[in-house]
Amino acid sequence: MNKEINKFLCPYCGDTLDSADALKSHVFKAHKGRSLPGPVGRIRLFINRAEHVFQVEPNWTLYYLIHDKLGLTGAKQFCDRGACGSCTMIVDGKPVLSCMMLAIECDGKSVETVEGIAAEGHPLIESYVNNHAMQCGYCTPGFVVTSKALLDHNPNPSEEEIVEALSGNLCRCSTYPQHPIAVREAAEKMKAAKK
Amino acid sequence: MKTFKHFNAYSIDEAVSLMGRYGERACIIAGGTDLLGKMKDAILPAYPEALVNIKTIPGLSYIKEDGSMLKIGALTTLSEIAHSSLVRSKALALAQAACRTASPHLRNMGTIGGNLCQDIRCWYYRNQNNRFSCLRKKGGRCYAIKGDNRYHSIFGGSVSGGCFAVHPSDTAPALIALDAKIKTSSRTIDAENFFEVKPVKTTVLKADEIVTEIQIPAPSGTTRSAFLKFALRKSIDFPIVNCAAMITFKDDSITGARICLNAVHVIPYRTVQAEQIITGRKIDEALAEEAGKAAVSGAKPLEHNKYMVAVARTLVKRSILTCAGR
Image (cartoon, rainbow over all chains, first blue to last red; front, top):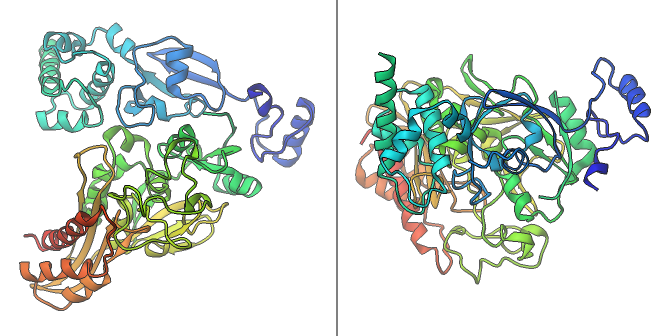
């Protein structure tokens, strides 16, 4: 049923046509100058700097695509309503909640997940381990990704700025006091590495 | 989530014509942080047949000064507004409101247009799978009247006998206090007249009408504005009560005031009584206190939300004093 719903649907006005040819001539006639529609739901994403092309359904969230379909299981689903931060990914440089974004609307965007942050050897990973900024660990990827986005645009954040940036991430084990310490340590390491 | 048709609109006209075709069977999606939650919980009386994405419309995200107006595109995110030095200098209350909305992540996603058009937050209305067929879903009654109403209206209900769900927006009271106008695809509406309570509806917008711009008149040199919010947590939470004020001073006296509370009524609640009391008088703590009392003089709290009257009274008082720099 999912496959059928968008069949030969004009993406500009919503007319439903009987065949691909009918759709072509409809677009040519009614929407002069517009490009002929490609496959519905074909998107291109740059995930951790690698280019991917996906065929997605309209109701897939970015989280579902990357976690369930692509298999990058670092981001976690907890509340699934945009209230906890554990599914955080960096999209076009900003930390956002992947459970509340439709994959079909992310065409052309670049996405960073916790896997990419670990692969590039970011000092945050080590400083999170050293400072024991986790207990059960379920929320940790969300915290790490949010902290990475903070350090990207503010390499020397104050404790207050760290607390503010992480205020959308929940941790039921209450590891909160450790996070500013871990992020500060990573910031110091990055500063030292630059010298 | 069940599936739906998905359209990317590339111009306002295209979005309007798509919405014209589907009417109430389609929803507009911008940031999506409110809509996707509603679709996941399946609380819409009719699940949308199509979504029209307006994020793909170019040129709807901007903050600019145009003559004596501050203009903000409908797709501008709340974090862009919160961090804009222009908004901070011309419409401080709005920057403060955007800054206190939801969490940093949600502010990166949510837009100012969506924050105004968001749906109500009532745990009966939002209960999964339409478990409570309430007035806002064209059902029989408001479950909050006899149920747990600790976060509901203290100024009475609306919609045929009373929906008591409050409007949860933080930016709405700020825009009303700042005397903003909301430009849509077909008209310009005063922020104050933008909100309306109807089944499955919180604004006066027609099905094929789209918010395109927010216009805020430049304040005079002696005008100050402020926004205060009371919520259980500093981040993520919706307001229990919030309050925005814009006050014009001449020396120590007040020459003009606009004060608006939200999350206390089915739509943002402008406290005209408080405005009248302070206008033309010299500001001091006793006067602010008096204004706070006047603001809640019409309150008719329910069984579990009497505390909200005290919160609203105090926020009105504090917002006046904040504008006065005390």
